[in-house]
Length: 374
Ligand SMILES: Cc1ncc(COP(=O)(O)O)c(C=O)c1O
Image 1 (spheres, rainbow, N blue to C red):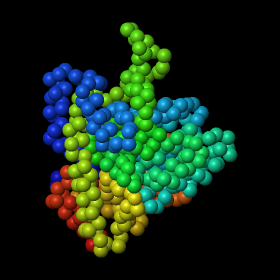
Image 2: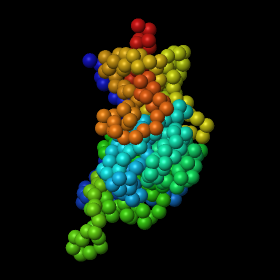
Image 3: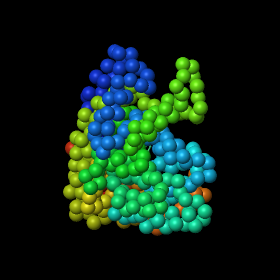
Image 4: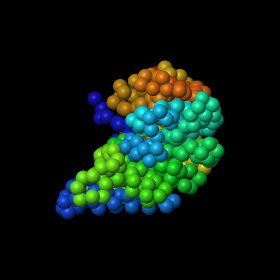
């Protein structure tokens, strides 16, 4: 059996263990400490735009806290991009609210502004103004920020920017992770930088960050004893994990460059293959190319290629199955145009790690070419 090539595996810089050692040496083995503060400052300096960052246990917990901070509660409706990972939508349900799924457009594969406005008007006509819009920069490609923000502003609905996959991407020169009323990041094991598991909430004001940290640390009121007037969560990032994050921040830009070079490598390698289509960057969009994705001509080609790669011990994965197709969300209202269904049928993510070697990249190209030539 040939060695496994993963879709997207962790890639350490070598600096991580020094931060972890420091945490052990100073006995900051807790969900607070210098690495947590340092990682937050590193992220804030990277994102700029005067944002505040709260380091948390996961991107999912960051989404959950955003909804809580926006006052989303039982019986509310929240609009969510249908083409995404389930974690974008789960926290809506944690709050007892209903997800309203909106389809994608073809230029970025993200939330379609036309469908969004149709959905908002229809929900209002049916009696409820959505409490928030969760828009996602899928695979690192920025969504149509101007168009989505304009609609959000028109109907006075806050935007939660799910930037879990898009750290290092930018839209018209501004970093993804700074466009929402709240924005979230993920440092899960497969992301462009990883802390093994972790995430962050990005806020526009310091009080919002402080409220998020308060809720993330079991909502302890100011008192010498334990006093609670809110329900809290155990969502804070550990100081050990944050040490990994600080090490990873030293190589974030080079990871973006490596992932973009993987994408270009595939574009060049398959330029004569008319069966393979790539998503181009629309004007103003700079994608971190977290995952390199291709579209094939049909579901059977996509599945045939995936199995051919699997035979060679190469991991690939169909594009996210839209939320409106998921059994758990089968009763949720949706506003569809067929785009995300088609992308799911025809799309495949190729191995995209920043640690892919030339030998591995050539093995992938050879396996794809063999499939199409057989
Ligand atoms: C689009 C998207 N949203 C949210 C998440 C959740 O992040 P986490 O795994 O850190 O909870 C992920 C990834 O895992 C994701 O890809």
